Length: 161
Image 1: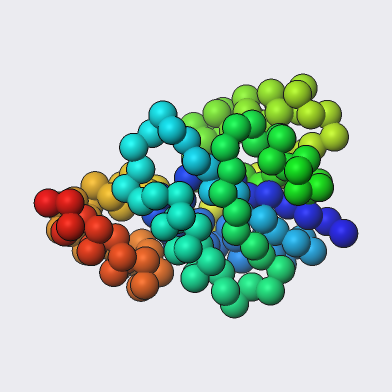
Image 2 (image 1 turned 90 degrees about the vertical axis):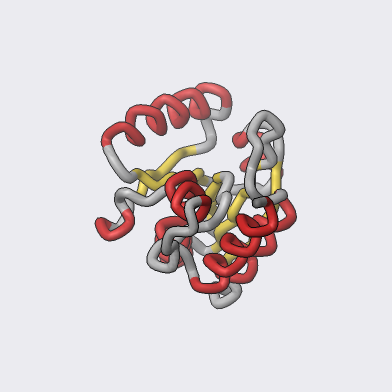
């Protein structure tokens, strides 16, 4: 059984993330979305909120589950008996950074491979950071997020202002 881990902060989950998740779900028997709990960052949403949002937007995918994790990604991969890490690439700058991470993970855990999926061209510019910035200025984020996530982001931004 081919099992993959797709890690990220998903703060918030974008249409680009969802594209990678759906494509991975077609290729793998089982996909675990690993929501990173990184204490050094100040996310807009708590880990629990991000996990719930991802569960909501992936509920149509029977072979996808969502978990939070902290610590080393390769430890999370091993704990879940996964075979590969999946990463999305938007631009060449992503590749340089992701290649360095993949090679480091391979040294730490030689049994774990990383596969890269290029982002759909219509999402190649998209990041959670950009979405949050636009939302902070009350811009239209509806083209970047699933509708239910866009509503949640707008509500969270309003509550913080």
